[in-house]
Length: 362
Image (cartoon, rainbow, N blue to C red; front, top):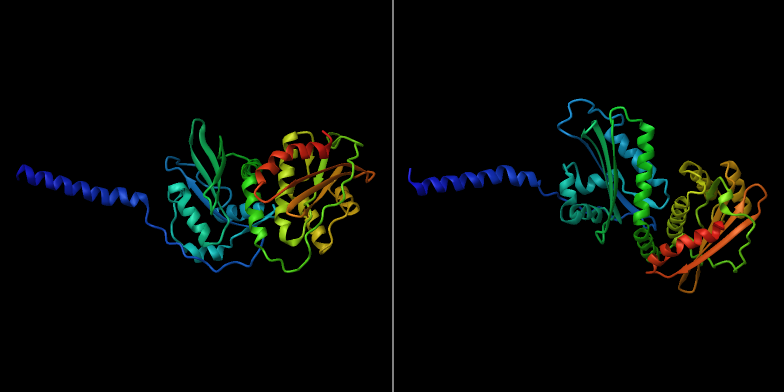
């Protein structure tokens, strides 16, 4: 065989190797269909995708205490408790991507290009990619968790995660608590983006009822009858607004809770206790929760103080007003307010620490 023939054969062999190894490794193209538009809503539509991974180097301890399906269902249930997300249904996900095998690297490639494409096909405002993985660590089997939230429109993304030793014997409750903290971190990182998306979506939403926007309450001098740090537990009720801007009000409330937690001076009512408050509010129909009802709810969840608020409008400006009330005597302890316009969501988050301190008299 001539030297030229040998070179040609080597080149052909190299091409075959590339075709058989490199290209399949990149993953086949994923076909994404566009589903029917959902019922109009101001809630932020979210597609949640879970990866459950066990490293190939682990020979034991590969079994998960919670199945992939149950873990995904628990994740969605926890996320929905926030009140301002509408999670894409499993039926819609099947309609968009079917049973195609999608890898993490495919999702992540090109600045989460595929994740955004699927999100758009599902009419989702955001995509949440969650990964739980067991891998070999220095002390044995490690548990690795990661969550990435991607804005389907802009591609902006927010990431958090943690690694835990001794994954085999890890307490399920401890893992749940760590996951809860991770999702709170995601919100903290993304809250400005979430608020901007909610304002934009709400402004284009046509409400079912023609109720006028809520007007702000007349300004009242803030009483200073007790610092918030004297409270051991505080219930922050969802701020009220009209139908069109209720999601914006809920995100602002959650941002306030996030800010109060950073103060580390008191405990806040947990998600289950907040669910009680929301059910009570829903039972009231269109009427906003009054101070007396908020105090009664505070007593039910053993809170020392309750915070209520509303999102109103003054011309083109949003007006956020909040009030802090003592549960024992029903005494008003503090008030705070701030204003902003659409497009000034970053300024809202900058003003929030001062708003929280004024409200809690810290």
